[in-house]
Image: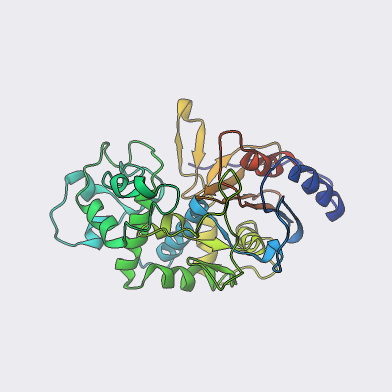
Length: 354
């Protein structure tokens, strides 16, 4: 599927005007710590705030848990490995994870593309995940479910739908993708991500584990009490990334071409282009469009690509407009709730501002 959308011409927006927009948007979000960061063709404006007293490390230099907003990193990694010829989108995951092992026919048909695009037929989480998770749902639901158990659950799975026929958001599937890429390359996921994505893009403040004391933001429950750092167990590829808001902008700028040092490696440049291309539609009248890894919506200023994420006590939003070079990164340290305004506020910055 191809799509060409021209963005209307807009007058340049000054950093001072952007700062006023961010300050106004921040008033709508109630959280101990908040960062709203915008890049316009590489020119950055950052607003920090929140109800908590600032600590010794500035908020924009703290590492925040991205939760499901980690998935674009997994998508870019897959796209780069494909561009390098090391794997193919149509490679079957079970063949790479356990060659020759008997599996359900539907599992045998699941490809790397299916896993990344949430069309594998797998559930959101393995069926046997919940018994061990429920007793510690608010503190550590994932830590007791390690990588080998994720892989075993995949190889024993019985998908409800034929792969490629239904869209169903799945942390399980993207986690399996991570383990499959590690098996295919003979490289641990964390090392692979660093080698192929983080280091080439200069993302020195991005990682998949907690950092030194005092450098990670602390999440909070709705009542303001702190929660432990997230342990994703075997679901690393689906939600383990931690990053500073400034690193998030660097990651997004690489997708818009607004980075000071654009990627020169041909496989990385090809991957950055590939992950912005619409590849599927879903929902009523196929109204929802997706790339390999980003949600894709129209706006008055051209298409926007975005992904949000939440953990036990933190939230993140990443988005960009390819046509205008706008990137928005937002982080907050309060657990999501039904009346939460965080995602709507960040999305509004992406879609409603010139």
